[in-house]
Image (tube, rainbow, N blue to C red; front, side, top):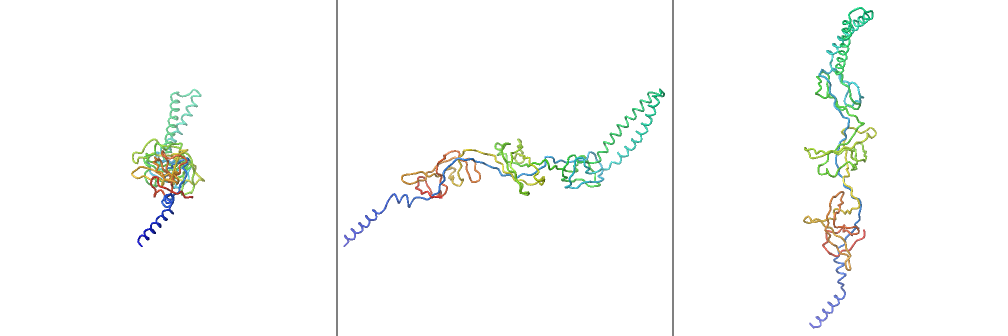
Length: 345
């Protein structure tokens, strides 16, 4: 009885072994399903996203030319002014009185001069007296011109046209040349300025394209950088850039917030891969590529070197070539030379 059972068990085992296929077990049940993409070359672009501010290239401070009490302030912040417009008047009564006094003296001196001139025409009178009268007129005319120029100092005028940003004078207080009285900005000469870390000083230059967005106006434009400073600010280790912009529809104002997207690196015919496909255990970067084995596909561990990254893409410096099949999904479950099945997207 026991011998019959043993023979039957052996037959069952042989039958089971005959139905299995070692190749199917390796390529089917143990193969890891993955998704791949063909490695291709293309253009890689890197951008710096920074914040800037709109400034007027003609924003100036105006100060009085003399010290005096403020009589009146003619403008308010936000007012539009033209070059030469009166912004404020100061107390210049002393100089005004001197002008009136000299004008009276000049009138008398001219009368004396005219009489001396008439006498000389008739060859009467002293030539010395004539010359003295003439010199007196000239001297008083020069003195009057000087006093009038000084009197102009008591009127504060706009030296450029634009918008009054700030008024720093009040009626009754004392104004002085050392104290700014008004700030005026000309909105026809606008620029966006921004600060960039010195780490990018070798990558940013005037050939770089920059997109300037003004969120408050929902407007943007793209142009090249106009100015790149060659000086590092020691207080924050940055350098500045400037982009001249038009006053779009007359709506752009100094001190508006601007968002800049600077294209600091552009490289053509380069291999890039998704950043998440790169693994870096212990700092050694690698990816998995699919290679045709015998008979199935296998995952091959491929060491790589990569450089800049942007927008989830990495620039490959070494290790991959166009035509390689990069494993993009399922790589976490792989090891070198492990069988894989490539899934269709």
